[in-house]
Length: 105
Image 1 (tube, rainbow, N blue to C red):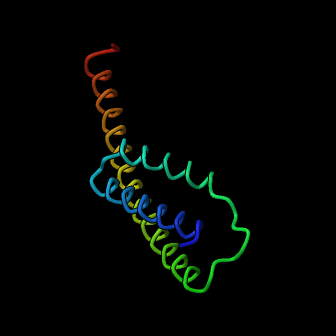
Image 2: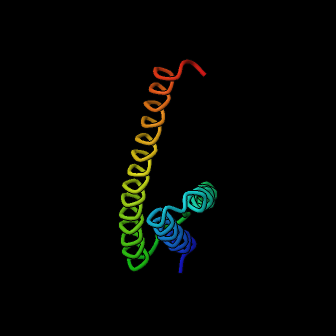
């Protein structure tokens, strides 16, 4: 297995773990895994020679998985951000009502 194929296998494993963390709402774990992913990507060197056909096909397959995981992670985090926004807006409305009825605090 070529070094670049090993890198992509590792990235696919990490994005799968990230997707699982996002599915479960484990945001701290997601952040930790994302940091690991960024370190690995930063350390990836371009290959001196292109991979053989079998490795190239596997890399394409892994890239598709990575992109699918990324789309699902993005969907989960966007839902979470909407929930946070709703909570914050609700809190702001509650504070306005408290100020209106009970005076400034």
